[in-house]
Length: 187
Image 1 (cartoon, rainbow, N blue to C red):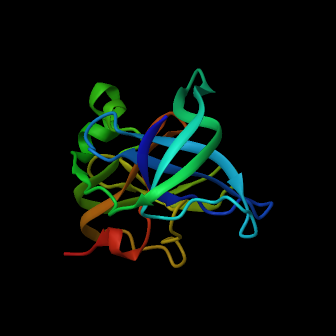
Image 2 (cartoon, rainbow, N blue to C red):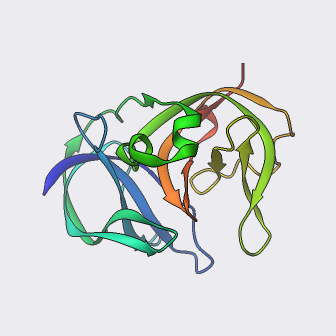
């Protein structure tokens, strides 16, 4: 158990349930965040709220297959211990995150910031629904799971001075998930 702050939550799935959220150690830094797999609805008694300082208990697992795994906590419960500001994002390189490896792994689940991102191409899920875009320079993915910035989709060649969000690993690659319009800053 450790005190952490939560950063944001994922969009609802097709059943109308939320699927998880990110938490981060109060001190921040590499290896300070993790994805929490926990389903809830708007009517649930226990659901996360941004800015809560919480003590979390759960089971750590690496979820996934040969394409890579996601570090996550499951079967969780938590106790609210107070409130605090969300940790400041850590500035990382989109090229380092797109390439994966030790630097990206150290920031999985952590609130990060990447600068100078250009909409190069759209990215679709297995059903063909556009869920984000790839940076035109590095190929780093920006995904809409926390905030639906794809309706309407930003135009190809749109440049963002900075994008902020938790770094997540899915479909064999690292991706950033902006939490709202304030996380996608145009020049």
